[in-house]
Length: 158
Image: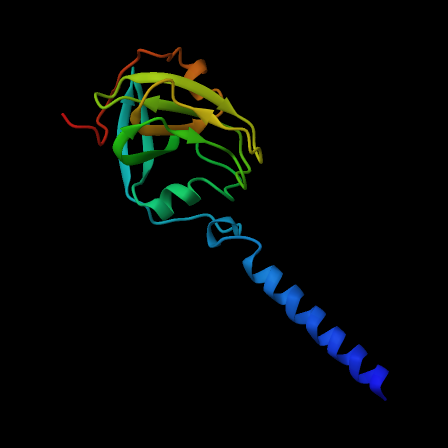
């Protein structure tokens, strides 16, 4: 009888540990539900028009484009930070390949990086910036946009 009670206690404890582990294993941002309802701003890049969702809060920036299976050709997401600093991005729980342009306060692209889906590799700005624009991978290259190009119409001060 004592062995049955120990076995039952052991099973109950295992179930509790497993349920606890499952509930804390992934933060809310990584639960594979794309965020929606963000405001959209129109940006200009040369003769190209971009419709960029604006991620301003810590939570919006943490979720970013995670769990999206696709993104329209001229759609993207602009990440807005309070102060310029070196910004580093990774692609955990992000399903689509992306290009990220690190953008200075005046809208000038500082550098562009190409990022692979589901990667923890860190991609950083070459200098402190307040803005990062993510687009489908290759978007900037296909349009001849490089470091030094200037974006128009964004959240940066006029």
